[in-house]
Image (tube, rainbow, N blue to C red; front, side, top):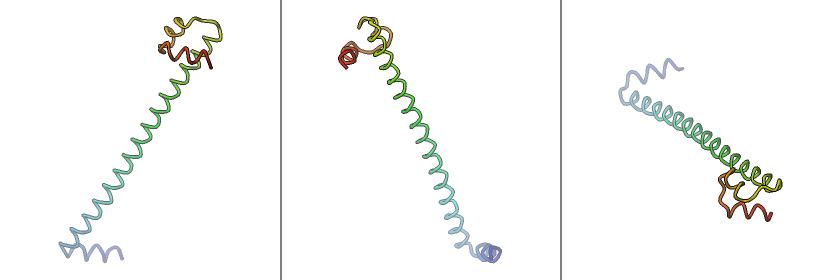
Length: 91
């Protein structure tokens, strides 16, 4: 069956062109989907790391406030703005 199709395609230039065009389209589509998936995974990991880092800083600030450190010291340690530290102290 495959040999027959190949034989027919190779004898007809228009059919061969159509076949090769479809094959290229399918290959390109598969490649583009794989690239998009990989980019999505990278973006998801980056966002997850960023969120985790931000949560860690907030936890550090909360713990520092619980230990009685001043707002100025907590701001120096975490890099958070004073307004954020004030909000954390009220929570």
